Length: 478
Ligand code: UTP
Image 1 (cartoon, rainbow, N blue to C red):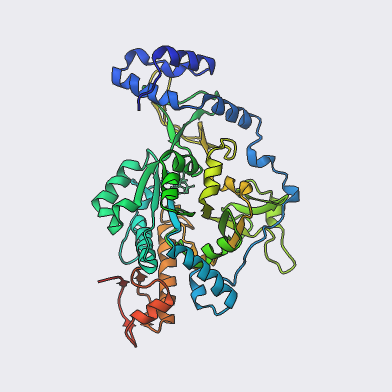
Image 2 (tube, rainbow, N blue to C red; image 1 turned 90 degrees about the vertical axis):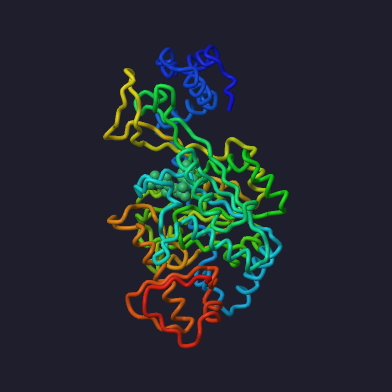
């Protein structure tokens, strides 16, 4: 992108904001490098950065400003209504809700946005997380697991379904190449849009000065999953949705292979409540669980990070012994397109959250420094901060065993690893097969492609009577 800035403009603006040091190596740079640096500098929101920096210096981050003494548990649709398994439920109300969701899908009213711009540092996989081979038998990548599910949905409802896939500079090129190499895993070219989210510069933790990653480049990192809002608008995805008459956008993350994409109950409940934003939650198993807490406060819903929920509240229990603040955010949201359009015009709805991280940088002599302790402040927006702005927001509890198998850490950690996710997939699919009448040898791995069977009912129709499964098997279309 042409920067529109020359050296004089840059010096003037940087001087005003106390950031002139980033031109320290200007005389050593080639013409191309100077152009690259200027192109980065023109994009920085200096006033916003300074304001956020001052906020953290005052130790008054946005969520801290909430008076949680008046917090309540959120009103929610709670289990035993479940997601996929509710196809087995006979309750008429549930069936009606599901049907509403199915009708909306059959009208082609639903699109998906997959956010895959994170750096995935905890997993330590040297590629975008979506490329991680996760299928317990098939070794399908996470990306393919989601695409297979969307392909199954398209076939089920006979409609095209747009997939908006958000990357970041850290993941973009490899993701594009991966999809190209695999021919989009058979997903129609015209229905996949891969777009890149924005970045934010990191600041020195002590001085608040911009860090340089190279003599001609700022240390930039993706601006958080909240960057989805701006990027959807900027790359014309909201416009594309409008043109396709897609009214609802299903948001999901790259790290949960059990995410119940296209569950008709979830969509139906969203429609029934005329909600602008509906969120899946799971019941927390212990007070300190590392998930955001969905709470109600003064008639609005918020997500409060686990680090920000006071211990006294986290520990509170109801008379039956269950946690009072039980609702863990699973990062699956359903948005009305019109809500996102309204919000994308407002710069004030998603505040920056600040995190202290280790960031490699160039020191004043231009030497590369690899810090051993957090040396930088990173800025991220979070998508769930839209929740207090939504009209008639809804919270729907899902069964964690059916719908949640996060991959955050490398194998060997005590939770949320590739191994724990594969175990959760196998155990769910073993149960489906058994319910569908199959006999399974103990300890074998099974995996079901949603294109083969969407739920237990379809599985039972597909399996020959008295099926015995004696070895590791991937049930897929031949
Ligand atoms: P995480 O909060 O788990 O962050 O992202 P991460 O960067 O993937 O992993 P760590 O913390 O470095 O180990 C949750 C979801 O949000 C996406 C991620 O790709 C993941 O799907 N995300 C996160 C973005 O798309 N952009 C971001 O800037 C941050």
